[in-house]
Amino acid sequence: MSSWRRRSGARAPVFVGLLLAAAVQGGCGYSLAGRGSFLPESIRTIAVPLFTNQTSVFEVEQQLTDKVRSELIGRGKYRVVPETTGADASLVGTITSISIAPSAFNADRQATRYAVTVVVNIEFRDLANDKVLWSNPSLSFREEYEVTTGTGALDPNAFFGQNQNAFERLSQDFARTVVSAILEAF
Image (tube, rainbow, N blue to C red; front, side, top):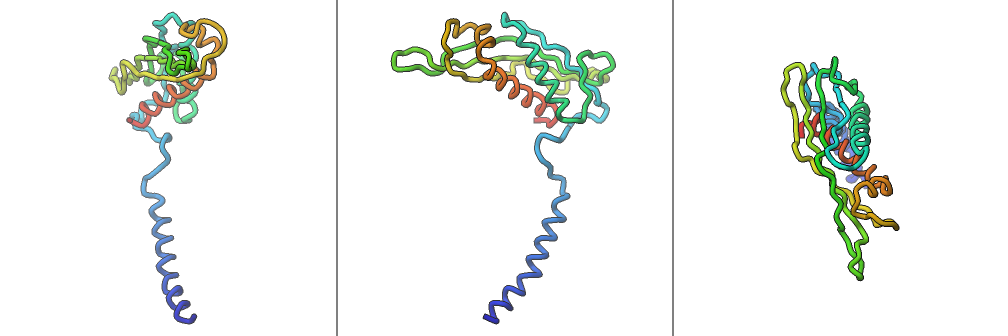
């Protein structure tokens, strides 16, 4: 038993040394994802005007714009405004298409699940230098939902009226992706 104590006692300084090394390494520059920014220091105010909607779906641009604004505000580092006047940068979006297609069927070949796809053209511009910092002309997001009773399953207006939870998930995912791409240079 005394030989065990001698061996474990010899390990104590090594263990303490490892703990100290780990504590020192804690300040090595690593941080949690989603909190950094690769934007120029001059950008403090970001304009996010209401997105343009080129589809026939009513008011979808309002929810997507609101989610992006909220996500930027949630990052806590930038002031977000709806107009470009006095802003350092702008984030402009154009919703170019919305489609709904069946994604699952039952034994009777009736659709039981649908997928909605939203395509948006996004551009983030440094207004002081008139330089595009990030853009994606066809950013696509897809969300699936179960068929609800009623008609018009392939009508986008019916989808956004009856399936708010699915659109809420889609718009939140869209906002996180856009803001992360801008701030974290992915």
